[in-house]
Amino acid sequence: MAQALPLGALQAATHGVEQAAEPAPLAIPPAAPPPEVAVTRATVVQEGAPSATTPAAQDATPNQRGAGLINPASGKGHAKGDPLEKFNRAMYSLNNFFDRILFRPMALIYKTIFPKPVRVGIRHVLSNLGEPVVFLNDLAQLRPKRAMRTFSRFIINSTAGVGGILDVAKTADLPHRDNGLGNTLARYGVGSGPYIFLPFIGPSTFRDIISDQVDGLVLPLAIGRPFNEVKFIIPSILAQGLDQRVEFEQRIKIILRSSADPYATIRSLYLQERASEVADVRGQSATPALDDPLTDPEAGAAPPPTGEPPATPPPGTPAPDASPPAPKPPVINDTPPEQLPSPPKAADAGCDFAG
Image (cartoon, rainbow, N blue to C red; front, side, top):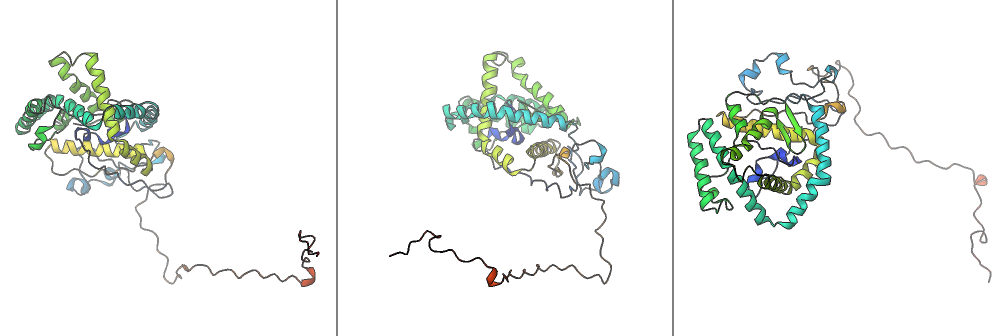
């Protein structure tokens, strides 16, 4: 399932990729239009919600179809699915502050001390330790075939992969797949709850943030030492978070530089990926498209469109002249010669013609 980063850096928006040695390219949603352009719709499709092309969406009433509009006059000031947007944006800014003064410098030190093969090996070990949690949730979701693949992956990497340092199972067509209690609850109809962004954790939802904590207690409670000891918990959290921060350095820069509203972009990426994961758990073949305005409603926006076509001019109205304006004639100096200033004398110009 979606795992929020222990250190809560911006890279949590593209969670799940940290298990691969070479992360896949990140597709960033298009930036929002400038404030002077009207924002057409701000519907964030929730998990399991019908898309605009499904019969259920077509049969919806106009009020239902427009329920996701951001209406500045309503006083809500948040996108659908993000009722805590004002709080979340404050936490996002605080997280950025910690990222500048703490997360990123620590990640650069981590990258300098440990070369990439060592970082990949640590990443594989931590991923392998999470396979029992994935296996238990596969069973809870009544997916025995997938559970057997997860179990086989864990056994292969724990033995032939030298405790998980090498991802041997991936070459045997047994790649890692995220799964957890959040997906299990979603499969049985538990809603995601409001979107929330917290420092040191990153983007999540009420359901997932609680489920992640429960998943993290499986090994400490079921096995005990060393998984319940501080000397294991803190280094593993730091290693995972710093490694992810290193891997997502370029992606963070892309989001910050190319997005009109990085907070909304991260929210869109996270919610879209979670919707895709939940759709897969529920056996749905298609995921509804995520329609997010990618703008800050508190920043001000043009009024929402009325849905009426633009007015057409009456017949016979001449079309506006689109040709460029004619160039202005050059300014001619018509001052009489007697009024022009006399040219400077040689002595005044600093020249000496005496010979």
